Amino acid sequence: MIDENGYRPNVGIVVINSENRLFWGRRVGQDGWQFPQGGIKMGESPEDALYRELYEEVGLKPEHVEILGSTRGWLKYQLPKRCIRSEQKPLCIGQKQKWFLLRLVAQDNSFNLDSVEHPEFDEWRWVDYWDPIGDVIYFKKSVYRKALCELSHLGLPQGIARRLPDQYRLACRT
Image 1: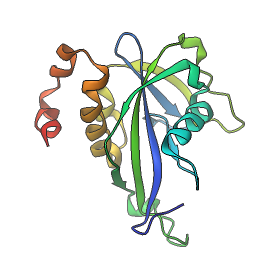
Image 2: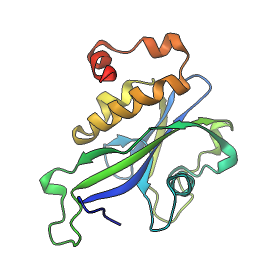
Image 3: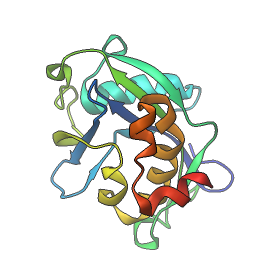
Image 4: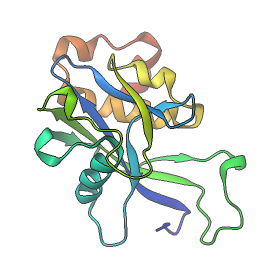
């Protein structure tokens, strides 16, 4: 499902634990790390897609998490030209994402990266809240920054939310 502007509707998922650290997954067979994310199917709500993708990518079920909130609107990123499949119709130039912040209410052993036949991740770890902005692939950095800035007030104690790294301070105000 691609919208009229060439963006594929998608959900982004940030899972935070009781120590205010975030789930960070390594893509199977790659060096790249990212948050769970995935497409919204025709007729599926963003929340339905969230739970489906959460299970498919990390094996968590709805009872393992609590939704703390989501971004107000869609956050977009464009794919690099080398990643665009120009023969594909309709043409997909990027993703528009609704981001959700989830609190893990289960144990770490609830994660199961092999919950489906073709896993997305082969390794995971907990990271500090702002670290993913610097670690994600370059074309997703802006969306990650916007999502984490917008969601920070939902999941972080005020002191941690205010300890925003200097390089993101101005960006979180805009």
